[in-house]
Image (cartoon, rainbow, N blue to C red; front, side, top):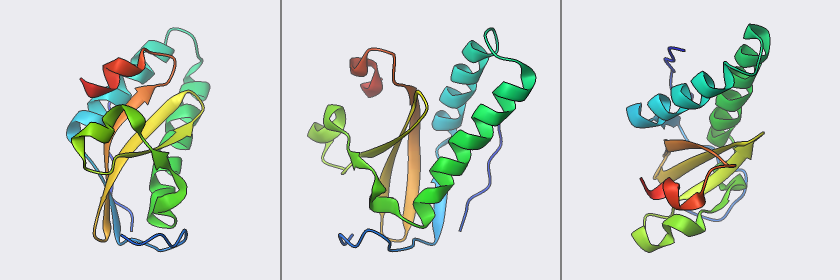
Length: 117
C-alpha cells in the first residue's frame, strides 16, 4: 500500500498545540510494511480504516503532544522519544520546539528490541 501524508497543523502543559506534525519517510515506509502484513488478514475497507485511524491518531499530536508516554526502549538515545498507540500500532515521535516528528510506526506485537532498528 502506498502512503503519502501531509503535515498538520517543551513544557509539560498537556494541551499545548504545535504548529506541525511531520513524518519521517522511514516511518511511512514502516507503516506501509505493517499495512502490507495486515492486507493478508483484513478487507480493503478494514485496511483503509486502519490507515485512517493510525494517521488521525498521529495527527492528534498537533493538539496534545504530551499525550504519549516516554518510550523506554529509546531512552538511552536522549532525544525524549515518546509513544502513543492506536490498536496494535505504536507511534513513536519526538518533539522539537513547535514540531512533532513521527519517526516510526511499530507493530506492538513485535519484539520491542526491534524498535531500535
